[in-house]
Image (cartoon, rainbow, N blue to C red; front, side, top):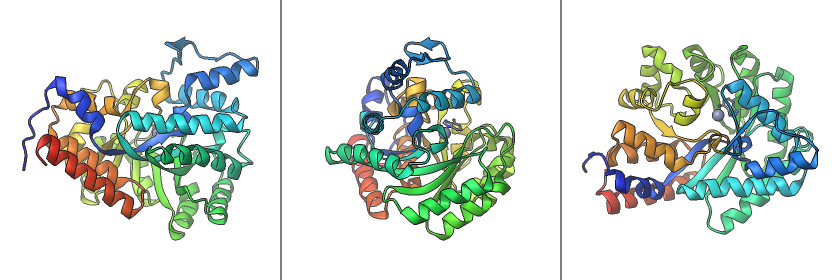
Length: 348
Ligand code: ADE
Ligand code: ZN
């Protein structure tokens, strides 16, 4: 049993970068490097509807973010750009010492590819293959429904997933804005079919929905992990249930601050939830839009909440255990994590 003393600030940056971990809440759409969509916009003779700050669109709400994704992804019509986006996503992971990611992609953002999903997945896979061959993180994909889709559309997606059984696409997800309704009843059947067929399931909830959205994600969608989920903190009975059932929350601290879900990192509920026994991982959500790195999110939490070796190890362990990587891959990553903790900070 080691110390859980805070890590000195001078050592923290390097340590969190090297800490073996997985990223389980990361949108492909939020990993598009600005130069890729800016060049595509120029080709199409368009300019970004939002003001740019440091080369990034100024995003201040979830709806503005989703609208920007619709706009930026609609410009991407070349296979080579999909490969470049996959490579950029892998580089994002490698910069922060992430060994694996479950990357969410939502074809409703991509009009050029929506009816050509096999081609889209093929191009992305080729990019991830290249990065993996060069020693990069392993990457799975989760096809995400948009909450505005119909029940029939959701079932069509599951039909596609079951017919194609694309190697990399291991799960079904749902994202978007719940402000106009979560509509979980509408998606329950599709999620049940996905579960019956052995697909993994995660769902955005407890970001633009309150505790009710989290309950529904668990009970109606059978979500194995909750993307965000942090507004569960508003209902103590739900917090206890998440802890009791060991359902992990895929938390994105900076995203929550930028989109107004939390006032600041200091006021973010991740620490209260962790202390209440809820399994939490730390993630970036849409790193290119926020100009953040995964290691930076770990560093910000560790500095703010005085996380030491024990807490950092626990969050990294949750990220790996919660991932949809194969059992063999998880075992290998966990072994690397334990060796790292033992060697670097004396075990947990
Ligand atoms: N799609 C991309 N980022 C998202 C977020 N933070 N919430 C819901 N849907 C998203
Ligand atoms: Zn998200």
